[in-house]
Length: 143
Image (cartoon, rainbow, N blue to C red; front, side, top):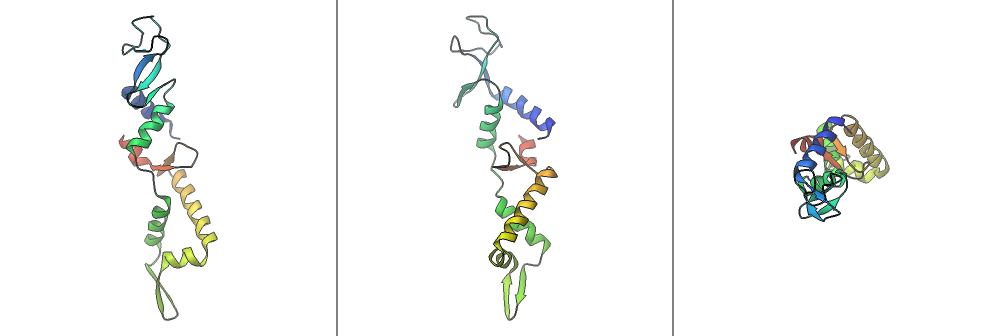
């Protein structure tokens, strides 16, 4: 993942969360617990919970504020932009995407997987769970 995006997401996570002393179970907005003086603090995300680190906050922000890419729809749109909308088969005029998907589903899935990999390599889509879910990079940057 792009280090710049990762750093900006970390900064966003720090802005949206509050330092929290687990030992005293109190918020510590100054970065040091007013009760025990500890600076070894968890992060609390209001309405979600508290935990060490920021990765869980980033995941929560992304899951609640962004819509995942519908890879199937995005790939179909890409195919529609590259090929004519319809194809003539004998006397029938058929939707090109439907024909490709139904006539050779294995090839369709391979092409979709290659498209997904290419989009990720080019930085158009980004995943935070090793390819399980993708988000448009532009949407992540807009956060």
